[in-house]
Length: 444
Ligand SMILES: Cc1cc2nc3c(=O)[nH]c(=O)nc-3n(C[C@H](O)[C@H](O)[C@H](O)COP(=O)(O)OP(=O)(O)OC[C@H]3O[C@@H](n4cnc5c(N)ncnc54)[C@H](O)[C@@H]3O)c2cc1C
Image (cartoon, rainbow, N blue to C red):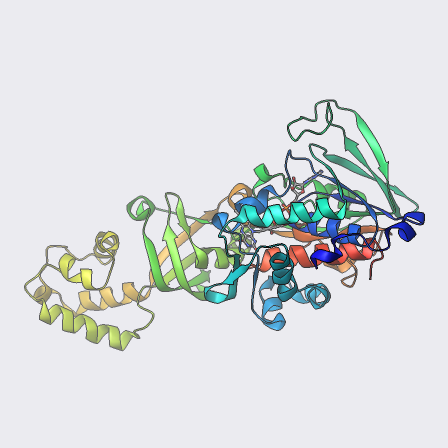
């Protein structure tokens, strides 16, 4: 693929060269820009920050989980409200293509637990730098500090953008203080401005305004893959505690909505960690509907109630002379023991042989159903992704072109498809960017 970086048949194409504008230089925007340029288009990329790919650089805790090795059918299942919209994009450019793309740019990858794929170097910045090299080589004209302020649409056709110019030439450090707007005209425009999460990286929802001005429906945006807030003083007691191999259930109005197994952690405001992030989309929607929402943690999912009871009987007999607070060390992390005894109303000083059948029952039930009332969720600034966005019903999944406005394309997180953690969101950004870039440049 590296050899393809020289735009094909440049001289022939120069005669009838397409001009493509890309709005936003993140994962989707850079992939779209490079592909359009490979197709012989003259590509102008406008990025409002002073650097490209800021979010990419911090993704995956600095390691960047670029994709997942799951087969396409399973991959699609990881998206909401429906991953089916992505099927066409994945059929054109999928995880193996993405892995080859990075490998051909000298960035080998490794696959880890759960099929998660990372650069072998372990550095997200390497992923970002490959993409920058890719678009530079492909001949994309990069404009930093250049926020797009609006679209120019004529007769239901996107013909250009209005850009707030930087004060001086692009140095990577200039600020766009001039207040002067310049119009740029083109044959196609691709909006890749991302969502609303981590706005400090540049994604502040501008693209939704552009889409709306073009007549597109924006499905309600809300934080997703987001930590949750918990009521009561439990939080201060448990902050910093990591739990592994637990099963967590969400209950709305005391009815089970969803459950999952894995790791979670307590923070100074509530809970986070992989399973909490995964379940958060359901919690956010339930809370927005004002439903009473709680989490039930099964701290011993490998033991059913009967087996757990036998285990408790054994421990209480074997260590009958020890205090219950000490005996529980065999079953629970130290930080949880005072919370457990407080909630089950058992004196920590009681010896094992003094624990009554009723107290043992309370212990067993608590270990299988440690309840936390969820009171809220953290803001967009702490959400890994944005749920909602440009309705996919108005986008052609074969091309990423708007069904309402000709020559207007969308790719990446701005679309109303969001995935679980595991590399799914970046693959979606790369695949939709790839498709939009090629289709905008008519490069098939
Ligand atoms: C902390 C964190 C970690 C993550 N880790 C992973 C991970 O490991 N794996 C994974 O799959 N996903 C991960 N994600 C999600 C993933 O990074 C995003 O889904 C993905 O980057 C979206 O790509 P995008 O190109 O659509 O948008 P973005 O990467 O947000 O890029 C949008 C770009 O558009 C620019 N822009 C916005 N408005 C304008 C405007 N008006 N004019 C010009 N430019 C504009 C922005 O400055 C930005 O550079 C993570 C997200 C976060 C926040």
